[in-house]
Image (cartoon, rainbow, N blue to C red):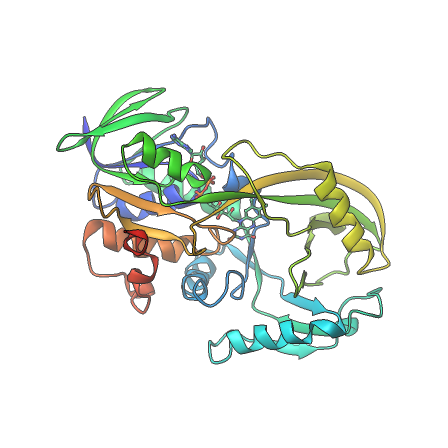
Length: 360
Ligand SMILES: Cc1cc2nc3c(=O)[nH]c(=O)nc-3n(C[C@H](O)[C@H](O)[C@H](O)COP(=O)(O)OP(=O)(O)OC[C@H]3O[C@@H](n4cnc5c(N)ncnc54)[C@H](O)[C@@H]3O)c2cc1C
């Protein structure tokens, strides 16, 4: 059977786009792993923050927020950006970047929000709109919607090569498939997948990020916000059972792989944390790492390849691929199907994310 569209990669990017197009075209999702959330999607910190990724990402995040809220995927959390006196320039830059954007940002005394904060942390900006995302349910619901609409999801079906001759013939570990359009939603593997299809890579670079779950004494107070260093050295997020997830905000270039945490990054995170609050770390309960993959300008890439018009990029979602997925999928679906943009993303200019910006 020949599909209209084959999507390579069943993470949040591929699953969300597939769910948008499945009611209109015959779609196949090819996922290399036996679990589609095994890589970046299943390793995220699972928060939605309108400032995360900067002003060029915010329209996708904000539009996604309304869609996520409508589906019941968000829970209130808030985010507190903190700094020391010599980081006032970073506070000013954050406020200036989002001035007039509609994102609420309030200057606060961080000591009034975080008990046990060390005295030198004097600067605070509260972003009350930040929320938890139920990533597992969101991703599952997208995949279920694909199947309900008649689409197919093939697991353990990693693309090995594909050739175009009026349509794509796709060789995978699970057999050969045919499709008119091939979508590259392969996360950290976006460039190798392009090359395996005879398409020039655009420089999608994966970077490792580490997270660990800590039990602390005291536990983060009930209802306390996500806390992020304004200078980008750490963040933590309160979790169920009085735990917290801590990251050193590391960004270490990596090959595409099954990323694992390095002891050094864990030690750096703990050292930084102990310099922020006087909470005692009782236990390091889990640690993990995942890859955040960026295009050279750190914006995602949605659109047909300039040199191969039957090859569609859905890549470079960096550290914001979950919080932008619903709107990004609608934007990408509009381009892919050649339809008028969905009302939820009508104000967003797709040219900003087009692969044409890398064409030479
Ligand atoms: C530690 C960490 C924290 C993060 N925190 C957040 C957060 O709080 N909020 C947020 O919005 N985002 C966050 N992100 C970013 C977010 O997780 C990613 O942007 C998003 O998951 C990317 O989705 P994806 O589908 O492109 O990638 P993936 O989930 O990696 O999916 C790509 C899929 O392609 C498959 N694949 C690869 N090669 C092939 C092939 N040849 N054939 C078939 N399939 C193939 C892979 O197996 C994989 O399943 C975080 C990321 C990390 C690592």
